[in-house]
Length: 370
Image (cartoon, rainbow, N blue to C red):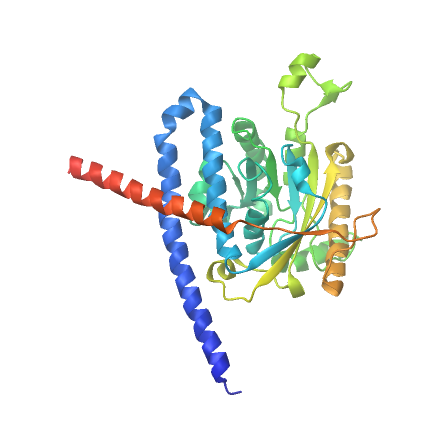
């Protein structure tokens, strides 16, 4: 079929835009990530004197870095509509997010839609595949204290031990409050066939839009971070002492990401912006931690039920273009997530100014030494 002039013009425009966006992204990374690292190196004396304040500053810088990633999608008109419970109401509490995983764009989507949720981004910990350690953002996540998990049966037990040690070492000491976890353990397209075979073998529901979750990481997180209760107070102390202790995890946020026509956005699309403007839909359902069983068998059943519900949510969305109302409500409530362009420009400007400043400083020391 012959290409029309209009199609050729659009293809040329998309290619040029993608090229410019890629150049901007490279420049963005070259100034922002080294600046983040250098700021934290310069602040090491503060870390020794006041660790809490150091990690507060690190969290602010981390949030700004994620805002830059969010801006790549926002300026390509990849926006988010949120459904279900309003997670802003628990932004100051400790929570774990259980998210379905379709593509690399899921992470970018969360980076965007959590920007306006108070201190969440600053105090969150990500659990992600170990391959992300070797990306441009890997050094940032390592410093921030995120956990990179290696998939596969051969590594499973070892990884759970490492996760427990990681939580003990970094979660409280760095004042983390939210954990983002993808319990499926991989992308939908890669795990669907295996999950369906497992479901058939074990007489479990046949799922198409999600896969059956894995228990390990969720169990470790809940076991480690849920505060043990005795007679209404934290175990191991009186009421005064209990008030000074962390409350532990208080909420589980069942998070479901849906893309129009079940076509997920990947990181390449997010960066290059060659896809037409797209609205991603994110559904939240909040569960009090007291309603979540901790025993392995009961927790497995509870997790499976959440993903069966995700399947129903996504089936409804792909048929109607909207999520169904929350149980007990008759009307669907959705909220359009917004970011301030001025705020994003200021963050980007700070990154480029910081990059220029550090370049001048390093150049000065180089000339002094050599």
